[in-house]
Length: 212
Image (cartoon, rainbow, N blue to C red; front, top):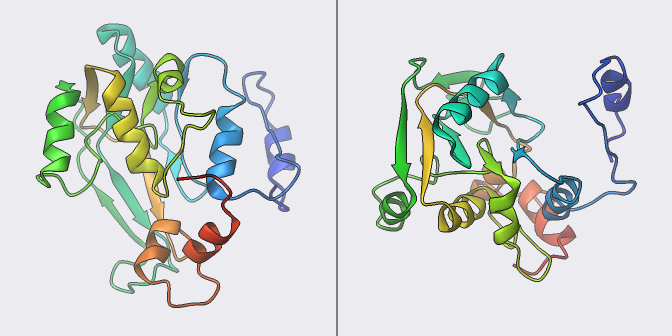
């Protein structure tokens, strides 16, 4: 339900595979994720935020990986850009890049679930994630509960576990195919410093109508 010129920008691209869908009203983040997912019928799905980005040639790169290994989930190494309004000035306007080597490995979901639950990993970045990763719709469909998929306050971590429960193996790429953005308007960042009365995380909780 953005009020900027998103629709006009999309209209400039003459690609029948590119579709712009407006919610028609303001939704909470969780509802917005569910709304987007309701418009997917088949194929592979990735979620990214409006402060994130897909890297050039990432779609064709991932397509070649999927064609070779025939997996239903593909994750990539994390790259992150902290926008100028990031609360920690020492990290503002800073890009972190892990690797550019085109190395991939076949991972076992059970092993990485155990690594995360035992805190041997800092987060779910190495898991078969839907946020900044590609997951086939047939896997996503198995994780719905009472008509809802994102049944958590933390959709990126939740979807990684939900995917891992329904795929035995997945591919992990050491070459990133997205850049995750972090800013003062990011829900995750806001949760670390939510002292303001109108912080993003407080707005998120206030607007949400989905049972977590």
